[in-house]
Length: 117
Image (tube, rainbow, N blue to C red):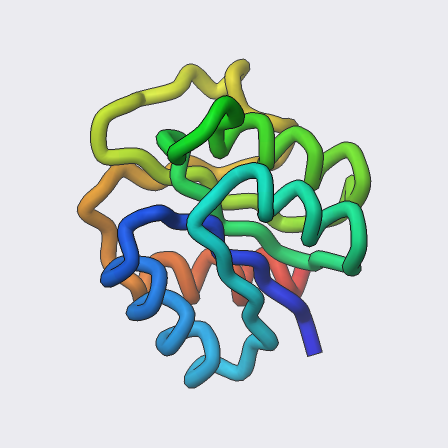
């Protein structure tokens, strides 16, 4: 089963996305901080990553995305934000960006496509 890490500090969004991903058949880990996400990435195998850009603490979701891409070059990565519109050059190669609000079904469809690739 493909393991997804969800990094989102807005609890309602995180829990709703985690539930939707579970229902879609994914194995899901989640956290609300970039620092904890980096620990998870360093300790476990991650196949897919969803991260918000703006997170509490010193690190951002982009830091998490780049660490995941470095450790797992084939990982599918989705970066999201309601306030920041990154340039494609700001994202790791192959990462997708979603502006908030997004549909949870869009995220699941994107992960399923990445999972098949």
